[in-house]
Amino acid sequence: MTTPPNLHFTTQIVHADRWGGAEKGAIHQPIHSSVQYGYDKVEDLIAVFQGTAKGGFNYARQGTPTTAALESKITQMEGGVGTIAFSTGMAALCAVFLTLLKAGDHMVASKFVFGNTNSVFGTLADLGIEVTTVDATDLAQVQAAVRPNTRMVFVETIANPGTQIPDLEGIGALCRDKGLLYVVDNTVASPYAFRPATVGAGLVMNSLTKSIGGHGDALGGAITDTGLFDWSGYPNIFPAYRKGDPKGWGLQQVRKKGLRDMGGTLSSHSAHQLAVGAETLALRMERTSATALALAQWLQQHPAVAQVNYPLLPSHPQYERARKHLRVGSWLLSFELKDPAQCLPLCNRLRLPINATGLADTRTLIIPVAHTIFWEAGPEVRAQMGIGDGMIRLSVGLEDLQDLQADFAQALQG
Ligand SMILES: *Cc1c(COP(=O)(O)O)cnc(C)c1O
Figure 1 (cartoon, helix red, strand yellow):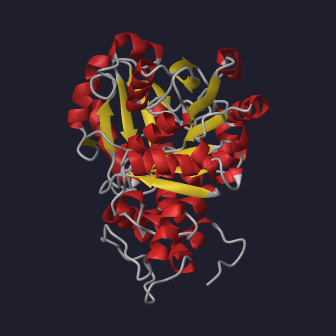
Figure 2: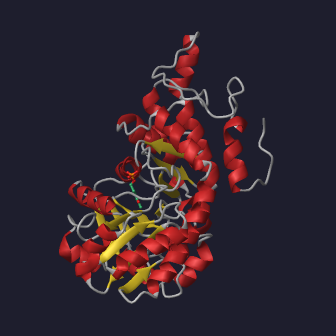
Figure 3: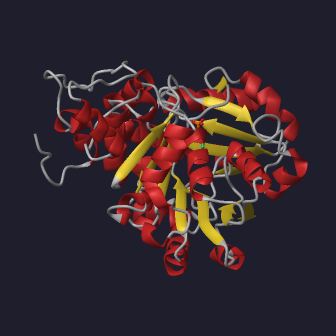
């Protein structure tokens, strides 16, 4: 069945499986657990190996019909041309960096990135790939860091935990001018709040573990090609993949080198859980964003709170940018207490938010940032990133606002 044109976000996603070709009438994509895929005629197997049979499967490390259905859903969400699913968000990011950059290359990245991504930058440096991190909310800093050997610019849409928003549009224009690959980690915003393709990103990464899966019960990651980057001029495409339409070269290399060779494959079972979660992305983003904004406004006027970071607060340094680009503000907010010594007691006094790392679960999660996720980074990096000892990160869940607010009121009173 062909997809009716001009459908809105959720309509398209909840019907995506059957328009992709329902098996035996199943309206949800079945879970394919077979590792091997066999063919009556050996020529058909050869066609899958040689890539002439489109959509064929041979070995589950390179994907199954279940992971392919999820990939197709994410491509539709991001308005892209193709997606590769991985076992985790970090596997997806490493696949991009390690298959599209070589020793001697340079990358410009936002200094406001996920801690583990920052740790990967250190690994890249040891492999001869230099990364310069800058305050990407300021286009001039990104511009000044570009060198003749720069290949890639990497930013997060809404940075964790400080909620900084880079100059998404300005960086897109810069990358287009200089022929640089623009890679956007869209995990916190999700394709419901923002599509990086609208600002010229070439590749979009989503940790499916977070917004898209949304239930804290399965890990996954995805790389989506928006179709906007001209791969024919990219020097790091291996000769074997410089065949056919250049539009497919980049993603093919990431699939062959990053998924088939490196093996960070998503299981069909996880793909199924993530696909079911994906169906309610818009509902969850609307609900958690509304609660997060109301809570942010309430915390901001509380006498014990020094500062609240949330993109849709007028006091946010990139408020205008957030209003322009984001449909909703997402579930991530962080705040600083006036008295950093109250940080741990506050976490312990709260009854609803759970002391836990992780993001975008159905339950609200809370974590003191300096003591945990940014502990390994050390005090110098924390200071550079504006992370004080009293910073607390919240991932707002589906609970009712009144209950969360009452809990914070009792906990902040001490
Ligand atoms: C969680 C996260 C990742 C890594 O995703 P995993 O699925 O946990 O490996 C990458 N980037 C951002 C912004 C994240 O929040």
